[in-house]
Image (cartoon, rainbow, N blue to C red; front, side, top):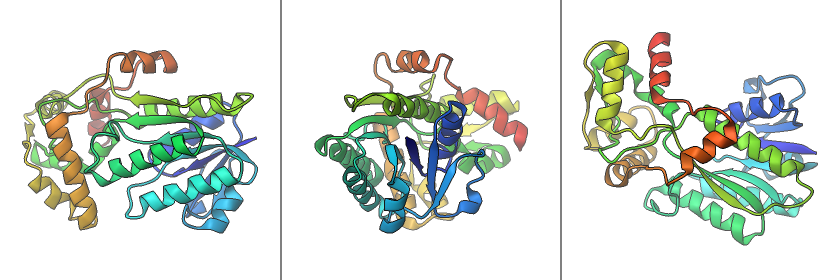
Length: 289
């Protein structure tokens, strides 16, 4: 049988496809633009998106296991609702869903609320699902690299509680392992939730100190006020999305993203290797600049 990967050309999805191919899985991807789907030979590329029902039904045909990744869009929940309904009608009962850390708590943040709604659908519709709840992506720091490298400021308002930022490669490998485990099982497996976290819980001041060390010059933390961050984000994304990013940042400041006991140990055991660190990412980003 085949594993269908949605969101396959994004930061996480692309790594998921590569990990599945490396492990010998039969993979199909659903993408709006096949020209961006430069995957390994043998990956089946289906054109369409999660709102194109004909394309979605065609992509799901012959699939037993689904990796569902919804980008943060204004119609994200509609995409999830349609996809899960079409999947169930096609007989799919094995899903790995990319949610978000503490989706059940930060419900004032739109994409957190959407993902918690999708989690409830998976439960109530009878899927056997692995729900992955990653923290803030280390890879998102590419958006603020100019502020760091050119202006000496780490501008992301993550506060002093701490955020266990996670590398997209770690998220993807966990997803691939779970997809193959569910695909290979003789029947539907019980659902479970995995918090996908990074090796270090970092405050805004901690991150600025890492960058200062990596670059050999002083980098200042921009502070906890999210208003300036929202304005900056609105310069290159829709205002509604920039406001959503502000709401998310406010949650970082008020609550942090702090792993639960055993989260890191579970991931290291699952992966069989250490988790990727923020410091290593910073070094690589600085070297590539």
